[in-house]
Image 1 (cartoon, helix red, strand yellow):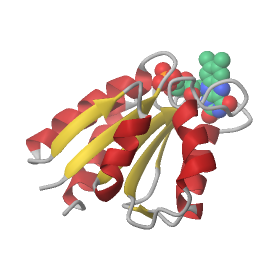
Image 2 (tube, helix red, strand yellow):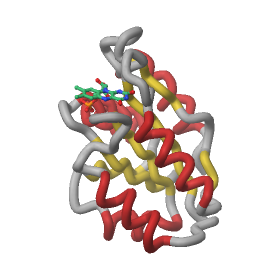
Image 3 (cartoon, helix red, strand yellow):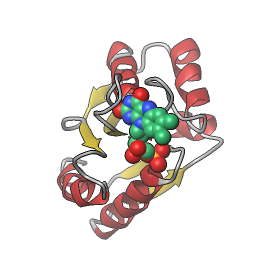
Length: 149
Ligand SMILES: Cc1cc2nc3c(=O)[nH]c(=O)nc-3n(C[C@H](O)[C@H](O)[C@H](O)COP(=O)(O)O)c2cc1C
């Protein structure tokens, strides 16, 4: 079973709720899971050989929440090529804003640019259509967890 680090970017707590539900599901599948909401830099390096699941909302005008922005900037400025990295991505957003899921999409683009391998498709959750994000995230996580070695 796999080791999974879940890295959360949230302003109001929706992404954290999704992360906690994901933790339960992945644990039940036998994976070893830890959720990181802050001080993520060291943990990100530790999980270089394992799996990471990034779960982030978008705030401002397509911006990353403050909790995860430092991680994004450090990866962008310091990480460089990281082909051994395997990740999944859940983006929370609201299509009534211009930059729908801008933060999640930026994270995905950055990791792709650095050679990381995405496991599965990115899940985008639209708050206008789905007020309870875990309703769509839970089945997605069930599937995602089955793709891990
Ligand atoms: C001030 C503000 C700005 C937002 N900006 C965006 C945005 O640019 N793009 C987007 O897709 N969603 C945007 N959203 C929607 C949030 O990403 C969405 O409500 C999400 O579920 C919040 O999750 P969180 O509680 O984990 O932060 C914004 C929400 C607020 C309140």
